[in-house]
Image 1 (cartoon, rainbow, N blue to C red):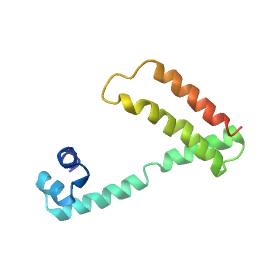
Image 2: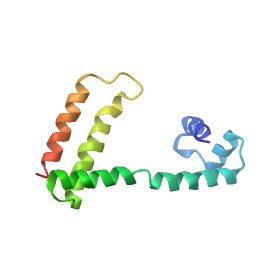
Image 3: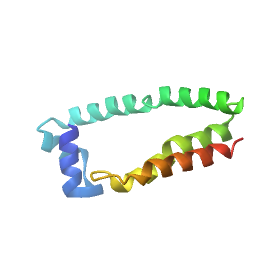
Image 4: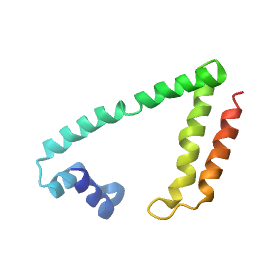
Length: 113
């Protein structure tokens, strides 16, 4: 189903519909909606463990796991690295990205110190 979705989205972009994806997959439309609901349930819990680790990291680093510090750690450990790497996905990631990511992450995390 995900392969079918990728093919339809590639050709139709944001106007792709569930019916088109089901047709591409050769599946009844009901199975596409069921798959979507199962996927939604799985995705809603996918970050639970990462969020728990982020809270523990905030407690260790700042001695408090308040919302502003957790938000800073989220930016430092997820948003910053993703933003720096994303333009190079599918190709070669320049060597300097590792060092830049570490420097950015340290600087963002330090805002909560």
